[in-house]
Amino acid sequence: MGAILKIDLNENHFIRDPEKTELGRNIIRESILMIDELGFEHFTFKKLAFQLSSTEASVYRYFENKHKLLIYLISWYWVWLDYQIKYGINNIENPREKLMIIIGIISKVSLGNDTFTHIDAGALYRIVVAESSKAYLTKAVDSDNKEGLFREYKSLCHNIATVVLAINPAYPYPHALISTLFEASKIQIYFAQHLPSLTEAKIVGNDYTNVASFLESLVFSSISTQ
Image (cartoon, rainbow, N blue to C red; front, side, top):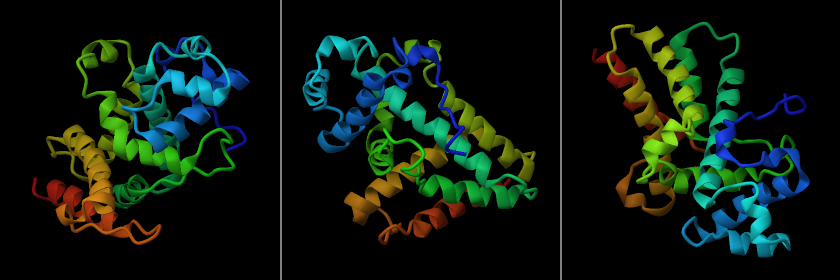
């Protein structure tokens, strides 16, 4: 899968497609590492350019600003997650079993370091958990939405919502449930790692099954009450 997989994003995410040049891929690689280390607020194109031994102008040839870069990184993750989910439920007929698998994948996704050499799997996952809400909780959300910058996330939620409806066609809130599922997965992982008194979910090493169990309870109890 990794040899033929290509992540296609809305061209409005960037000025120049970073995947098509060595500098562009370096920008993606270093920005992931720096945002993970510094946090999005303290990350700047000036710091990125210094790390690349390049210029701010060269970075701006690829992305309009660091907000657009963050949306690009988060959207890249959503597209990859969609691939992982489709691969994971391939040939599974039972929709309840499909949803169980999907929740397990959402709880923790390993990107596979040998698939994309310029993507640090762990760093990108931590950015999604800690920073992804900053992609859309902004004053520019409506204009960004008109540009189609959240297309990948909305498509992913819709695809999973159809599985919910396959389980219970009468359930009236499939998209609300799935978008809540994504937000809950991120916040519970973040709380488990940093504010453990706010959650019963536990992460032991690389074992996220306790988080998945909570999410299963949240989703299936909602579906079954209708």
